[in-house]
Amino acid sequence: MLLAHLSDMHLTTGVLAGRPAERFHQALARVWALDPRPDCVVLTGDLADHGEPAEYEAALALLGGLDMPVHVVPGNHDHAPRMLQALAGAGYARAAPEEPERCYYRVDHPGLRLFCCDSSVPGRHDGELGPTQLAWLDRELARDPEVPAILAMHHHPVPSGIAFMDTIMLSDADDLATVLGGHPPVTRILTGHLHRPSAAMFAGALVTSAPSTHLQVHLDLGPLQRLAFVDEPPGILLHHLDGATAVTHLVPVAHSGPPLA
Image 1 (cartoon, rainbow, N blue to C red):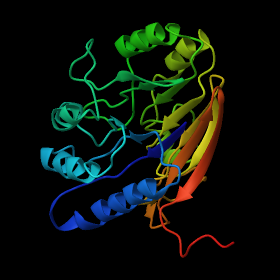
Image 2: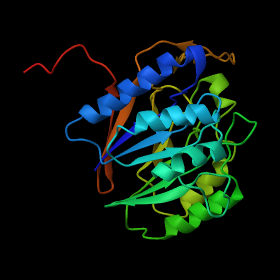
Image 3: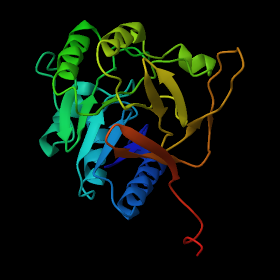
Image 4: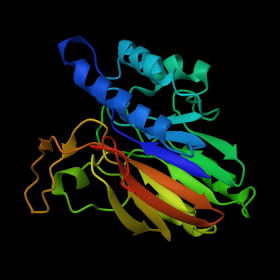
């Protein structure tokens, strides 16, 4: 199974709308050009820049040309109820029965359980799953434990070394680790938020952060909590899943020519 992982599109409206939308369109075109094509696409948050309805309408228009399953989770720039209102009808997101204002849900693909989690908190830039969602995840992980599992959420649960970004990471990561520790290790934890590709171990699983399809966070591993963005090439992650084995590839959105024989 192939799973395409995109993140941090930051679609907006007005005079600044062009570039994020163009780059997201290019990223989707890159996904569509892959051979073989992915079985599904996961977007790990910050689909919108301000969480406004018009931004989600733009996202809906761009995603409409992609003829494959798409699964979206919200980030700190998103507004989960507005995102659900715009995207749920197309099957791109689902409200949680336990918390209808939040967006977390399970998707079953052949040989894969995908848990799409909502780490967004209104009015905050750090993330939190919360006890209700963690209890749901605990119950769902106990179902069909022999089937490999992947978690998708926006905020990273393990420090990245980028000081500012680590002040707004997942605040209840220890509680998540406790839940995960009661089950067989998940195959991957897919995140965004960092606007950089990265990989780290957490609770027996590999956490992979996707680059932004728009701008990247400057890689500053010093102690000062500074935030800056750089116009490095955007990319996507492609996860090749074979049972409990997974390989992750970083795929640039653009390249300068066809493969050389």
